[in-house]
Every structure is written in C-alpha cells, then in structure tokens.
Amino acid sequence: MKNYFYILLTGMFLCSAFAKAQQNQPKEILIESDIERINEEEFPGAIIFQKSNKQVYIQHEGAEMWCDLAFYYKDENFVKAYRNVRLKQGDSISMRGRYIEYNGDTKFAYAAGDVFLKKDTTTVTTDTMYFNRISQQAYYRTGGVVTSPNSKITSRVGRYYIEQDKISFINDVVVTNTEYVINSEQLDFYSVPEHAYLYGPTTITSSTSKVYCERGFYDTANDYGYFVKNSRIDYDNRQVYGDSLYFDRARNFASATNNIKVLDTLNRSLIKGHYAEVYRAKDSVLITQRAVAITVEDNDSVYVHGDRLLLTGKPENRIIRAFKNVKLYKSNMSGKSDSLHSNQRTGLTQMIGKPILWSEKSQITGDSIHLLNNLETEKVDSLKVFDNAFIAQKDTISGFNQVKGQKLYGFFDDENQLKQVDIINNAETIMYMREENGDLTGIDRGTSARIEITFFENTIDEINKLKSPGGTIFPESQFKNEPQTFEGFNWRGDEELLSKEDIFRGESPFVLTKIQGIPLPEIDEGFFSTSDDSTIKPLSTSSDIKEGTLENREENKPKYGQENLDEKSKIEKDALIERNQNTSTQRAQSPTLKTTPRLLKPVKKDGN
Image (tube, rainbow, N blue to C red; front, top):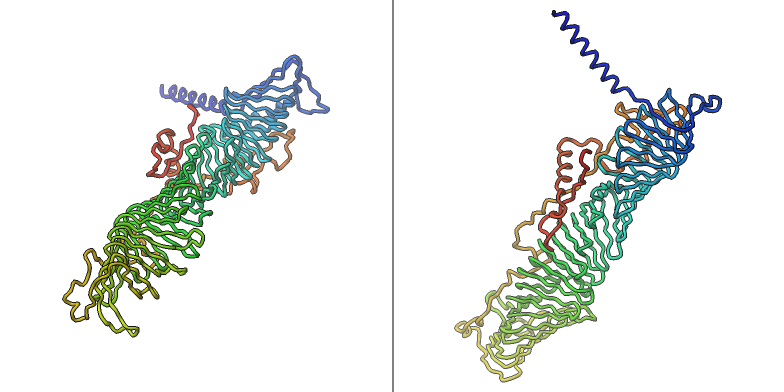
C-alpha cells in the first residue's frame, strides 16, 4: 500500500513538472497565408508567406501581426515581416512599420521604417524601435516623437514603460504645447495623467514667462508645475527665485518658498524673504517671512522691512506697501512705523502709524511722516510731518534740543542731509545755545507761529522765529528748575537702525520651511540587458540587425538618477507620487498658498 502511494505521488510530481516545463516552453509562431513557398537556394531555412487577397496573418501568444510578405525560420521560431506591417497586442497596443522582425522565443521585436506605436491616446513615431514583450517596454535611440492629447515630445532617446504609462526621454528633449515649450536634458513623462518630471537644466518658455529649473514637475494637461533646484521664473521685467517654486500658468500665479528673491530689472529693486506669491496679470507680489524690499536711489540702497510686503502695479506705476513692524534703512537715514506706502511714480513714501525717523543726529516723530523723492535725481528731496510734529537732537548726556509744532516741512541737500526744517502752527523750541568753541551760553525756550531751523553738518545751527515770536533764554543754572522736555517727548535713540542688518534686530531666528523635494529617478538596467547582466541575444542568424546593435551604449544612459535606491529612498519616492492622488483637491483653492503644492500621481490602468 505504501508503495502504491509513493508511486502515485511520484507520478503526480512528474506530471506537474512536465506540465510546468510545457508552460515554460516557447510556443511556435503561427502563420496563415494564401501563398506559401520555399526557396532554399535564395532563402535557406525560410518558409515564405505572401499576400494574395488578404495580408499574411501571424499570431504568437497574445500578439497578432499582419504584413504583405513574411519569411518564417521555424528552427529559430523567428519571422521577418515586410511591407505594411502591423503588430497588435491586446486591445490597446498597436505598432506599424515597413519592416518588423520578431523572435517567438524571446518575444523581442525590432521595427524599422516609419515606425508608429500607439497605446490608448499616446503615440510614438520613429525610424527604428525595439519592443520587448516580456518586460513590456519599447525603446528608440535615433530620435522619436511622442504625442499625447495636449503635448508633443521629441527626444534623441526614449524608453516606453508601457504598463506604467511612463516614457523616459534622454538627450535634446522638447515638449511642445500650444501655450509653451519645454526644453530639457532628461524627462520622465506619465501619459496618464500627462505629468512630466524634469531632470537637469530645463526651460519652460511661453509668450508671457520663462521658467528655469534643474529638477521639477509639470502637469502638461493642466499647465502648472513645481520646481526645487536652482529654480527661476522670468516675467516681463521681473525674475522670481526660490528654493522651491510653484507655477500655475492658467491662474497667472506663482509662489516661492525659502530664500526668495524677486528682482525688478526695470525699477532696479529687489525683494527678499522666505515666502512669496506673484500674480502676473495683476502685477502684484506678496512676500512674507523676513520680507525686505531693496531699491536703489542715487547709488544708495534703501531697505524696507515688514511682516508683510505687497508690490502692485506696472513698473511705471509701482506701489510698495509694508505692513506691521515696518523698518526703513539707508546709509544716512532710518525709521520705523506701523505701515508704509511708497508710490514710485510720484516719489512719495508715507510712514503711517507711530512713525519715527532718524536723519543723522535728528529724531523726527509725528502722527504721519511723508518722504518725497526727486524723480530725476532719485534722491530724497523733502519730508513732511503731519500733526504733533517733533524733532529732537541730543545736546548733552541729559539735554536735548527740541522743536515741536502742528506740522513740519524738511528739505534735504544734494548729499541727502537735512539742511532746513520749517515748523508751522503752535511751534515751540528748547535750544541749547553755544559759542563756536562749544561753551554753553544759555537755553532758549521759546514759541512762534512758525519757526525755521537750519542745519550745519547735521547739527542744528540756527533757529529763526518768523511769526509772533516769544520765549525766554535761561542760564543753565536757572533752567534746571524748568521742564527739561516738551509734552510728547520720547527719546528713542537706542532703537535707531545703524546698519541694514538692524532691520531684523529683536526678531527671533528664522527657521526655514522644510521643502518637499523631488527625488532623482531610479535608473533601471539598460534596455538590452538581461537578468544575468548580459545583453539580449541576436534575434536570429537571419536577422538584418547588425552585430553589436543590441547592446547598451554609454551615451544613451540617463545622466541623472540613482542606480541603487535604498529601501528608505524607495518609500520616500513612492510617497511623493502617492500624494498626488486627488488632483482637484491638491491645487490651491485660495490665492494664498500656505503649504508646498503637492505633485500628482501617475494613474495606472486597471489590471496593469
């Protein structure tokens, strides 16, 4: 009985092994034709099939082929098809060419002459193509054109991963769309949903903008992208730089994160910060996170810092607005206010909300302060202080020269130094009067409807009471018994900005936002490589392919990529793709983006 079961089990094992061996055994190519002949003298080993009423029909393991003339080498399970050749695999993949070779053992095809490959809505045209049915990959390296519903892509080398709906392009990659053109060294394109990953120096050029990056993502169907390495967007007279850039052409919108620079080439101005939004159609830029606007005036730079900066208007009518904790600095002037409004067309800068201005040795305050630039010389020409105008200078350790009134008008010389100040309405003064050698002669405490002050070397030199003058000159000993300051006096000299770095004084150290990178692609083995690291064997001794053709070439390898991704890198890469599952919810609904835009996942067909 035991022997019976042993024999039965052995028989079952042998049958299973035999069946498995039969499954692994390559199947013969099947051919149907009206005309069949043999010509051993001219075509040894070949069975010749020829079209009569209908084309020659060839079938092999899910693939069908039609042609006008075929040479079948049965011993090698190899066929050569000529003229009007069509190859079809399933319902979605078809290929045409003037000539196709096919090996039934390796399921490898070679096509030449006006080759056309189509899967769903994606087509590939080239003069020579290789098709591996086992790996489901097609390859060209003599130039090709790929078309999708919204774009045409050309490159020197292309590798089509059919099941993944992915095509890797190398060398002279050009994506042409009705709205823009992409030029890149290396590009991975997912035909569904028409997403491109960009590697190496890349430009995206349209009639309204030009994007440069060395690594990025672009949705060619919806016309927006994300760029993370050496990225820049060029508009008419404006350039946007940042560690990461988001770009939406349809909305005329771009945003930038970390180490932002927005350069205005026409107005010679620069905005810096760590988050920015650009609205091209509205000619506006919003920048936050250590935001600072830098403009050039008479070869001197003016720095304006605030929690939030907003630039609006075309170059000739540009307006700069700064909000909250505003600070201003230039080499001989600095200031603070709650907000600031600067019109570059009129040259008027308004400091609003508790403004204070330091001009050399003078401290100027009031309810609002206006600075006016001479548009021709690009120099500060004058200033106006409205309501509760107050100007003070330190005279001694404890004494201060002071002038106050309802309004103040100041005028600057060619060196941007304060040369004259007029105080109008309810003017009052406290002035320490000194000889040329510096000896104090008395303290003038006076009033007038209008007072004119002149300066010499940034120090109050002369005071003229021009209307209804009054007051008393006190000796120093008697003045000690008088009020030393006017109501509203508040010396804030310790707050004065002495360098451009001081615009950030008192602020907490800034921590950059973590940028979501775009990993380099994983480099697959060469198209002609096999699992044992050798190259694909010749299709047949009768093949028209020259010896050495089916070999990988160094110049056709991807320049950018990772050959051996560790497990962590693979997980991170998969997670990046996975984040893009829901296109509509990932795109910003509000014009203000608070997070880095997420990329979109290449969607796979069911069953692939």
